[in-house]
Each structure stands twice: as C-alpha cells, then as structure tokens.
Length: 222
Image 1 (cartoon, rainbow, N blue to C red):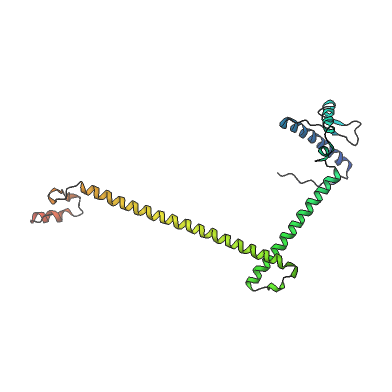
Image 2 (tube, one colour):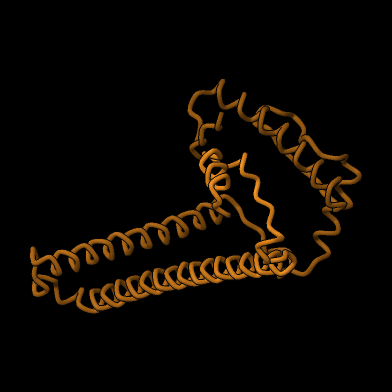
C-alpha cells in the first residue's frame, strides 16, 4: 500500500505535532547512521526539541565536535555552497513549482493549437481564427505534426520492407526445399534399374488384384 503524501505545513494539533517530531527525529538519526555506515563518511546530527532541555546529538558529542570543527575550517564559499535554511528551501520549491506550472501551461496551449490544426483540416474551423500572438506557435505546431506524420510513415514503410524481405526469404527457402526433393528423387531413381524385366510387381497389394490376374491368365502382360 502506497504511503499518503504528507503536506508540508505546520501541524496545528499539539499532540500530533509532538508525536510527529518524535517519529521523524528517530528516522533522522537512523538515516544519519545509514549514511555513515554505507558511505563511510563523517556524519553528525544535532536536534533541539521544543520541550527538551538539551540537544540530542548523534553519534556522540565528541564525534559531533570533530565534524563541526572540520566544517568550520572550510572556506566561506565551501560552507555555503549547498547550505539551505527553511526560507531558501521554500523559495527553491516555489521556483520549481512555478517552472512546472509554466511548462504545463505551454503544453496545454500547444495541445489546443494542435486540436485547432486538425479542425482546420476537417473544415470545422478556420486558420484565420487564431490570434496574432499565437501565429508563431501555430507554425511550430504544424511543423511538429508534419514531423510526427513523416516519422510514422517511415516506420510503416520500414515495417513493410521487413515483411516483404521475410516473404522473399520464405519463398526462396520453399524453392530450395523443392529443388532438393527433386534432386533426392533423381538420385534414388538412378540407383534403380529401369528395365521392365527387373521390376517386380506385387499384384496382391493392388486394390483389384483379380483384374490383373485374369489379364495375365488371358495372355496379358504388365
């Protein structure tokens, strides 16, 4: 079962907020332990709870001081290169959401123009109905539709050529098999004497042997 997506907003209910804090703090400590073990990197976590007298530190205060000291020995540019706070994080999410919204608006408008192109082809709309500001976009859409149709036609042609090639190969194989069967038959016939005197007929194997027996008795010859 998929987990429900959590809305990033302040939890108003005090008991729910505290329970969420305890749960997520444990998860944060576990993640820090996993990163340090799996990737062999120095990690420390310092968490201040709203009702805690002292901060909770992972892995220990001494090890955390070593990591923090190493961090502060970096240059200002290195320290702040990937550093974010709540405000910066929120701004990044806003910019990302705005870019996604803008992309969806463009995609929606292009689909509307593409629909209008097909309506013009059907005769149910006119190209003159397009606004002047959308003329360039309409040209792009028309070119894209032409490229899509051309690509589909090429795929269909390629598929047809492959099927035609397979049919030709099957015909060639069948002809080869037929010629081989004829050659085998000729080879067998060459090993058999064709003189009528050498042929031994089993008249009892024929459907009406008495007809041939009578013929032989009356002087007929097979």
